[in-house]
Image (cartoon, rainbow over all chains, first blue to last red; front, top):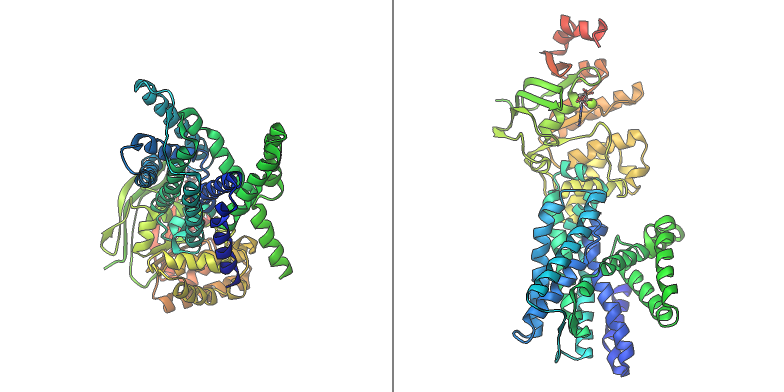
Length: 299
Length: 242
Ligand SMILES: Nc1ncnc2c1ncn2[C@@H]1O[C@H](COP(=O)(O)OP(=O)(O)O)[C@@H](O)[C@H]1O
Ligand SMILES: [Mg+2]
């Protein structure tokens, strides 16, 4: 009972962040909440089912694009919702063919599909004669922050609940051995597709919110693969088997970025790469995995 | 009425015919042994029945329903469970979780974790794995993994159980134990069983009927006594015919 209370207190404290009156602090909070929401969502398909997506930015970008198209025609909250739904529908369309391949081929395909969608949007925007769009008059930073915090909490709860559900058990079995999973009656194709769609909805909403924060939409930037890489890095560093992992990973990298980025931006990129390699080699189950193993040994 | 009926099942891998028009009927409640040298097509026969592989020809009917070509998870939910000769545990999960997830899907489809664990414990007791329930499945010995294959298949609540060389590599005493276990499971769970085994003597004791495969063809089918004296079988097994 202690952990849920502590977490609830942390959420309340996070919600009170804007009271500090520092836009800088709220900006960092927004960034942290964004990465938590994205990485938790990614864990559903890639951590639990073991289908590593290297193209999750496509859902983020889709949500952002929906917001851009709906801008000043529909209320922003409706556009955020529509962005999430659009991302989920896109995941169903992509996942149906792509989830048939396993391992490295799947990883490469997700990357390729995300790049493809990016250039489709670039070309559509070009054909419309739009080269970058400006979104003025959106909600203020504080409101965006609270919305993003809500998504981070929702994504964390979703991962936590799925991990302990029958659905989550099926996904883990698929990760361990998909043929054996099917042999015990687990409808792998169905579960994978559901997990993929579920892992896309919140990133779509995140993208819709973030494009209001940046007030500018440029497809090459919004669909940048760096977003996908960062999600994977956070999941690897934090651990991708359960909800605490993305919390650790996102917090770790956001803090690292804040401390290094302003002073030594090159050092940040190098540190991120070095950390990724170190974790893959020496602690593939991430910070959370290490902590659980230590607790199991001492307890 | 047979529970399972295989009619002219054929499987080709490129130019190789692994299974060549094999037909057989399996009566409910029976134990049928499947014999044959390495590469005879035994595992392929199981894969076709369980939906792991699609047949190249023929038809397979289970309880009056056509199952060939159905995906493996559908076939399992209809009541056919198989074990894998090359064991495939969910290595990172505990032994208990391996079995519980099978009970939560499979034919039983128990939605809640609690009741699924009750079944899981019962099956672990029956297969002698209860003392290793909280161990990671990947840390079991080979004999333990073979038992886990059986436990996981049983937990799905099958009517037809396909056992693929679950006694391979066991000592004589362990084989005797395993035979007793299979007998016990059949009675307790009201099972129909197909069992692949190299150990001919084990099959002779256990089975009501035995089928013999040779280079993908069914060369004999009958009671253990009939098989033991069947000229083609004696030839294939004792006469150096592969
Ligand atoms: N997936 C596969 N691809 C190609 N050949 C296969 C495949 N599976 C089995 N075979 C071949 O089919 C034949 C029968 O194999 P199998 O059914 O495993 O035999 P058994 O179980 O009786 O030892 C063998 O020659 C084997 O090499
Ligand atoms: Mg075999």
